[in-house]
Length: 266
Image (cartoon, rainbow, N blue to C red; front, side):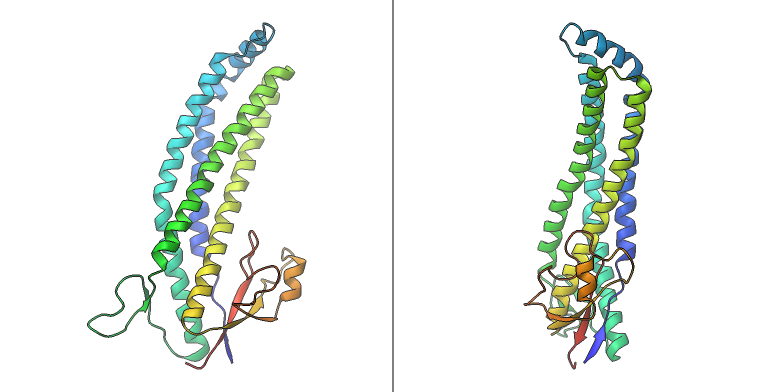
């Protein structure tokens, strides 16, 4: 039985990572424009009002203004999510066609989510499920994109509030905010990588089953970041209906392992 391993979704991962990093840069720019110039005076006001059991209304207003900016940025990102998934689906399809061609010398027809045939001839692989899969992925990622901004905003509010209550210096609070920039960027990177890898693995499974592939060989990337339990699975054969206890390649979060398809005789 011949084996076909699809190339990883590098282009799709780069594009989604670039988009989410743009989102983080806009959030950082908004923070520097809305928060940082006013931080010294707001800290003084907040600590002064704290002595009278108050909390600066100016800080609340400033944070609300920042949140509005974050929401606007998130809306721009959300508009681009369908095109990110469409790119992934196209690249996965091409990778499958190339992998099968390289292993068997035979060419699969390209996929098409709509009509099954062209002029009565089946020149496409019919994929009516793709539209629903895209809609589900987009909904899931809309929530994740929103969480980038809301979690950052919540952390920023905590940093400022604790700074006021603890009597921290402006320099200390500024450094904590700068550190939060990096934390948010790292989370955006993780989301992009995990969401692309997971969706690509699922596309591979569905399309493989559609062309009659019932089994695959587990393949790791072979570096030191591979989970020990996945190292143990490397080279072992599984069927789609009987996955190992850890799930199919692509799970859990940020799994870079791939399914080397064991091709039937076409």
